[in-house]
Length: 400
Picture: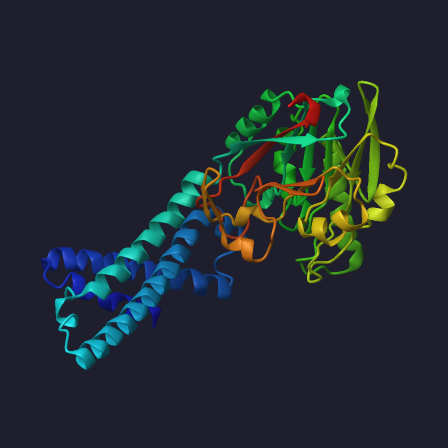
C-alpha cells in the first residue's frame, strides 16, 4: 500500500517525461520493493540467515531508508492536501482567488522533495558520519579544587555499542586521537555492547591501546547486562556479564561495580566513584547503589562520579550527594539526530526525554557532562550529532 500510494505523486511529476526515463524510474522504484519483499520472505522462512543479514547490513538499511522516506513522503503529501483543502475553503468563503494562484502539483513536488531529502540524509548519515569522531572540549571551574590538581585532564568516551561496528580501522584512528591528548584519566561510561559480550571481542586489540597517566576506569550501561535478550537460563546470562567484565579487565580497564577508587595525584586524593546503571526513569532496571559506591570516599579532595544515565544526576546526586563535584554520563547518544550550531542552536528529539542530553550542565556547585556517544544503536548513522570524544579539563576558580 505504501509503495502504491507513494508512487502516485511521483507518477504525476514525471508524466511529461519521455517513456525511457519514466520506465527507468519505475523499474528502479519497483526493484526496491521486490528486493525488500525478498528479504522479508527469506528471513521469515529461514532462507536468509542472520550472518547474511549482518553481512548485507548496508543494503538492508538502504531498503529501510527507502520505505521510511516513502512513508514520510505520504505524510507530507497528506498535510499538503489538507492545507490545500483549507486554502480552497477559505478562498471560496472570501472570494480571494488565492487558491487559483497556487502552482499546479505543488503538494506532489514538496512531498517528493522531502521524501528524497530524508533518504539522502539517512544515507549520508550512515556512510559518512558513523565513524566521523569529533573531539568536544570543555573546561570546568571548581571553587574547591586544590591547586595541585589544576589543569587535570580527563578524556571520556561512552556508548561504544561494539555490535554496531563493521570497520576496525576508523576506531584505531579514534583511539590514536584519544592518546594524543595525553590524558591524566580516561573514563568509559557504559554500554560497551548492544546485548552480547562477544560483540566486543573483535575489538579488544583496539581498545586495549587506550593510554592514560592514572588509568582507564569504566562502568556498565543498561545494554551491558543482557536484559534485552532471551536467555535459556539465568546462568547463561550471568556468564555473558562475567565475560564482559573479564574482557574489560583484559583491555586494562578498571571496571567499577558500585565501588570507588582513591588515587593520589600530586599529594591530593581523588575519589573515582563508579555506580552501576541507575536511571531516574523506572522503566530502566536499576542496579546502581550510589550509597555503597560512595562510602569511604568523603575525605577525598575531588570526587568524580561515573553514572551511565544522566537522569540519575537530578534524581539522586544533586539531592543527596552534594559533595560530588562532577558526574560523567552517556546513554542518550545525543539522539544521533539533531542540530548543533555553536552555542546558538542545540536541538535533538531526545531533549524531550532527557533534560540533560549532551554537553556540560551545572546545578549549584555540581557539574554533569553528558557524552554524545562513541558508537551508534538502532539507526547505524548520525545526522547533525557526531560521535564524541570528550576532553574535559578541571581548573580552580582562582586560576581563571
